[in-house]
Length: 262
Image 1 (tube, one colour):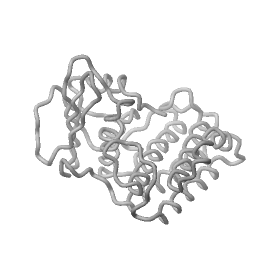
Image 2 (cartoon, helix red, strand yellow; image 1 turned 90 degrees about the horizontal axis):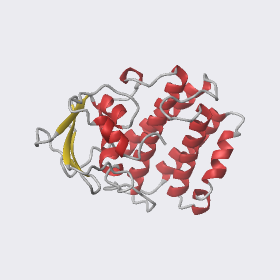
Image 3 (cartoon, helix red, strand yellow; image 1 turned 180 degrees about the vertical axis):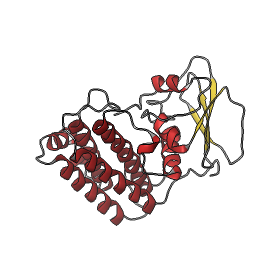
Image 4 (tube, helix red, strand yellow; image 1 turned 45 degrees about the vertical axis):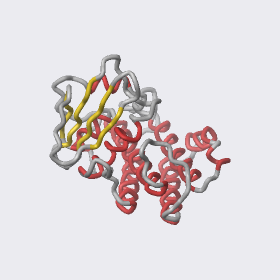
């Protein structure tokens, strides 16, 4: 990974990751009570989780098709999911249509994208729904098992995890709405131990600035977060994970960012 090239998996790998996550989510939900609490999503039930994720899949499909009417119907789609006779089947149907529409889209698709340093639209939507669905599949497993997930619950590898970390730190956290801030500036080095992926976060009163680091680059920082890519993925997306955090900055970052569980 170079400082100018994010670790974006190709569309085939992202759609494979999306399909695997959608099936994990639906399968976990199929053997669980729809009223089960979701430990990783405060105040949500499993039915809320399915309705939300299925709505997002349909909303993303509408964005790809530039269907503004459907994009404006999020609440109606949520209600459709909540009242479905078979919520896991409803989720599978929306996921399948999203994948079909995206695969058929032109490589130079012109469609909404909304994150910082976003890849082209077709890549953007494959990536966004891969990670949206992966995180919510972990939420469904948490609801099924009544606990936060661990790396042992993860079916995906370091490359997908590094890609999702990059989307969060570069795409989400650099947006003013979601950015961690601090009155006194400081820098945090985030480094995966099992893949060449690292980021330097500069946090201060203004929106955070994320720099992708080249392999072997080791800049000065006030704090370091390190671990396997999967554990960092879980930790940074607020789903658990075991990471090395000697300066105890992770909780502070979680408190200061609006990207938590929704």
